[in-house]
Structures are given as C-alpha cells and as structure tokens.
Image (cartoon, rainbow, N blue to C red; front, top):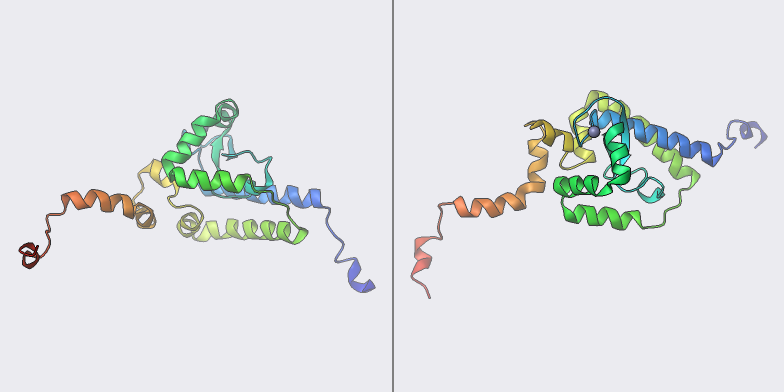
Length: 185
Ligand SMILES: [Zn+2]
C-alpha cells in the first residue's frame, strides 16, 4: 500500500549488520564489565574467541567476552591463550561445540538481523534491573563470577559442576550400602 510504503522502507543490510554488531558488542561489554583474561576494566572490547569474520558465531554470547584492548591484540597472535582460557572455564566439550557451530555456514535474513538488534537492546535493559539473571541465562558458568570468587552465582554454576562434584563426593561419602545387602552373593 502506498500509505505504508514510506514507513516500511527497508534499511540496507550492511546497516542492519552494523546495528546488530553495535548492540551485541555493547551488551557483551556491559555483561562482563571487565576483561575475562586479566580483569582490566579499561579499554574494554567484545573479544571473539573464534573470529567474528564468521557470521555463524559473530553474535554468540558463548563466543564473545569482555576483553581489554591489550589482551585482544595479544589474542590475534596467540589465539591459543584465549582458547585455553575457554576450555579451562567451560570445558573441552563446550569448545568443540563452539568450533562446530563456527564452521556452519550462516546467512542472516533481514528479519533475523532485526531480531538480533531487538534482542540485545532488550537484554541491555534487563541487565540493568536483573544482572544476575541475565548473566546466568547467557553463560553457565559466568566467567567473571569465577574470577571474583563470587558466591552469588554459585547456585547457577552448581548444575554444571554437579557431575564433577559427584565424582569427588563419592570418595568422601561415608555411607555404605544397606547392611542387609552385604551378606548376599
Ligand atoms: Zn586483558
């Protein structure tokens, strides 16, 4: 319809990509508030573990973390340091899954890009009112919480760690099978 055509004029795709990147990167900086590698809060960037040149993991919270400019530059020449941090924090399985996603060819439609822009604009608002909930929803475990030794996120991390802890607790658990069972062959 002629009446609505002006309102519905399409934003060029390169501009949508820029807006999506801008909202997403701002969200990551506000989410982490510090470099996950060294703890610095100055010159914070959104550092991609696996290159942002691949759109498949460009807007992925599990691929992007607060990173100071110095660590970001170092990462360009020594990506293995960032990769090792990732594996230490989230485990090798999570890293493998990220690599797999990274190599998946992804094309975004206009609607998907608009969805990304809206999603991260909204998450940035939520981050102000309920930061712990947003952080727990985006990443388990939340890396900055680990660096701080913060107990607040412990409940959220417990699930992820349960299996590991279960293995440890088995050894310290004094309980034995019911005595009635012992006599049976
Ligand atoms: Zn750093």
